[in-house]
Length: 243
Image (cartoon, rainbow, N blue to C red):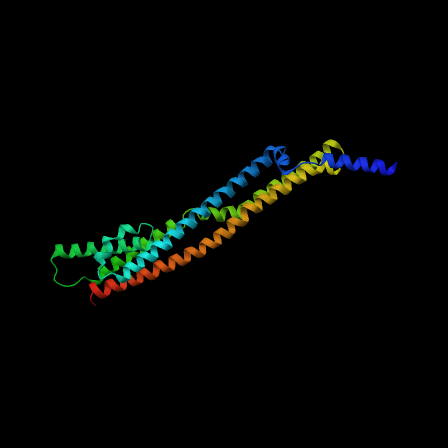
């Protein structure tokens, strides 16, 4: 008799607790649904940004390599500038174009003044500033929207924690309303809390990993642009400026 009653009660508990994740989400409160929607939105946007940045960096690296091949094989800067539009995805091509354009302005200004002496050191400083400005713009363009990943990585766990606290509060409220502390009473609220925690971590962890990955890529691109600017400036100084 006792074993029969135990089996019956166990069966009732199983029936009462037979709820999957979707049921818990659909039956959760407005606050928990809002938290989950916000975290899922953050996660989708993070993955979209990471995919876009991956494609952007891949194209930039490929185009930079081809542009460097042209740069070191070319016999004149004019020849490089003539084919510059082919390398639209190359950050090095953008930096080169800025430096070459400034060099042309200096040459035109010299021609108008009808100076017989070579370009002055002030002109070299202008080229250097043009290269630096173009380099900063390219790095800034490359880093665009990446701060969102850092924001998601730092805030998502706390947003999930807010949903966790709210779910636990719901569980205690159910205990107060029913006057019972059985598993069937507290399980929905606790489950909501665990789901928001899991979703918060699922949104934060890839965002943090993606942010760190791309920061490393950006530093590599920054170094590559800086090295190219130095090489370009040395070539300009050696061929167009005299001490």
